[in-house]
Length: 153
Figure 1 (tube, rainbow, N blue to C red):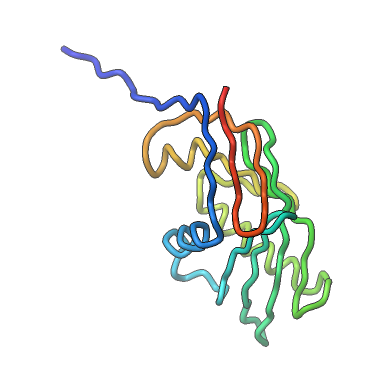
Figure 2: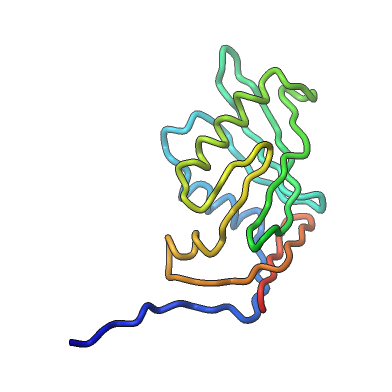
């Protein structure tokens, strides 16, 4: 009897650049159709990632969340840095919007919500959608329109 060894891709050096368009296409492909946020859009700038949309509550609540990105313990860490609803900073709608984002994250085994942060396990995401991998994430850089993720030993 022949035993099959598990195949694992080991990344030694990687520099991956994703654009606004890339992230929005991935979002549209993987977002559940029954999620309540409308007109959801991701925008990358030098400060990080902005997620904006409209949450239909008792009125249409336009919101914008800004997330600072970094690498922590081999995971991408997205820290909520700013929240605006209806064009002004405030906490009235923050808990509702953040709860929706956390609920969406909870349905993905490679995303963990922790306080005002999301932790993204890129290795688990690749493993879920492609093949087992170990990326050794080292850094993430943001500039207008694109994110560059670096990995390697």
